[in-house]
Image (cartoon, rainbow, N blue to C red):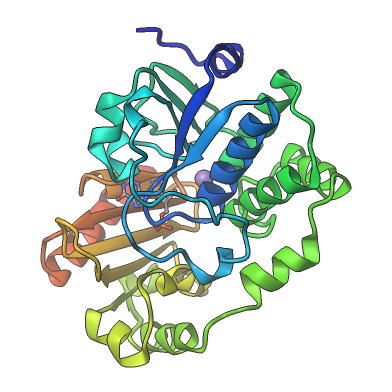
Length: 331
Ligand code: 5GP
Ligand code: MN
C-alpha cells in the first residue's frame, strides 16, 4: 500500500484507471458537493467512467439544488467493488456514510484539505493550507491537463465561495482570491451562485433561525455563545435537517464571542442523538480539539461531532474543553 501525499501520485492513479466511484462526506456542504461534481466532470472529460455517490436519502440542502447533480446515485452502483474510490473533502472514512464501499474498493484515493484527515486512502493528497478541497482540485486538474470549462469552473467556485465564507474567513489567501478570478474568467457565474446559495432561503429556514436565536445564551461571561434546536423545532416550522446549516454564523458574529456552539437533535436515523457544530473566532482556540473529545473533528476554526450524551452534558463538556485551552493559552 503506497502512502504518499503527492499530487503526481494521485494524478497517475486517476490516469491509470478507468472506472471511478466518487464520494464525499455526509451532510455535504458547498465544498463537498462542488468538489464531488467537479472531479466527476473532470474524469469524464478525460474519457473516464465516473459515478457520483452520496449514501442515504437525506435531501440535499436547497441552496445546492441548482447544481447539475441529477445523476447523483443515492445507493451504491452494482459494480462499486470494481471502481476506484475517490473521496473528496472527507476527513475520515466513516464520514462517507457507507462502510462497505470503502472496504470493497480495489484502490482508495483521498483528496482533502482537513488538517486532521486520517489518510485513509491508498494514495492521499491532503493540502491543509488550501481554503477548500476545490482549491486542491484546481491544482490537480492543471497536473492532469483538464480544461476549465464553465461546467467545471462553477462547482469549483461554489466550493471556494462557501468554504471561505464568501472570501472572508481566515483561510482566504491571495491564492484563493486569484483562483476565484480564474474561475470567473472560465465561466463561473458569481451572481447566479450568490442568488441560489445565499438568496433563496426557505421561509421555514428563517423560522428555524428565529428559534435558534431566541434560545441563544452566553456562557463564560459572553465568550461562549450557545444554542440548540430540537426535533420539535424542525417539525413545528416545517424545516428539513439541512436547514440548520449557517445558523451558527449568527452565533459566532456576537461581540466578544470566542466560541459559538449549536447543538441540534438529529432527525434522520443515526447512532447519535445530537449533532454539534463549533466555531472559533480566535487563533488561540482550536475547536477541532473539542470536537475530537466527542469523536468528531474538523478544522481549528470550524469543527463538528455527534453524541448521544444529554444536551446539558454536551454543553458542559464543551465549556470544560474551552476552559482547558483558554487556560493553557493564557499561561
Ligand atoms: P459543520 O459544523 O458545518 O457541520 O462542520 C464544520 C466542520 O467540522 C467541517 O469541516 C466538517 O468537516 C467537520 N465536522 C463536522 N461534523 C463532523 C463529524 O461528525 N466528524 C468529523 N470528523 N468532522 C466533522
Ligand atoms: Mn471543505
